[in-house]
Image (cartoon, rainbow, N blue to C red):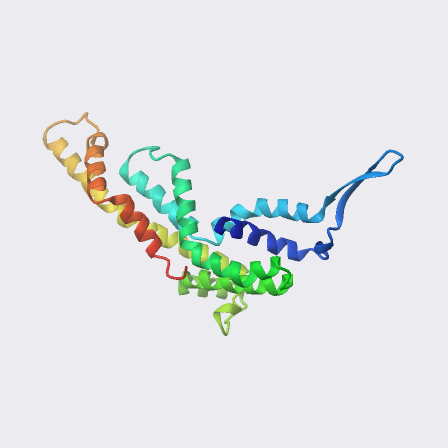
Length: 247
């Protein structure tokens, strides 16, 4: 349900922007032959296809995906395992962890905005307002106040009386900047122990006169052993999920 909620919520904003979509206004009509056979492409389908192209940007910019994938990439680089795990595995792990982190927000979005809209109990504009308020609550809870104030000053439209008054045009870049900063801070902390192992191994090899032997090659088994002994994947994934208090 969560994946369906994310997909339909992305299309809801674009569907609401077009008038009279409920009647299925034909965008393309083709008449063939004397019988007048017509083929029409509903405008809803065009809007849905457009929403599918925008969905990746929404997932990157309005969810926990950015922080998670950056931290996992830095962790792989710190381990020195080249392309192991491969990019497909890291992206899949980041997506599933993103859905896990965003589950409370998406559940609330579905219950308060999307479900009433699909059942015909709520018009498009009020549904968008409710959904926007739910997403703003998550974004603001995970955005640094300094970044939000910086973009508010740059836009020249603030200050705002309440957090819900902050427009998405100001909130989204502030959220992305905050996510990048937090991801690099976590990545720095993950990189330190592996850097210490590399330095120790390099010092030992230099003391033994093994100048031609790559320290990275020798330290790799020790880094993998340390990572496995401390259950590194569980610690990393659990810590990433715990950093989101607004989910």
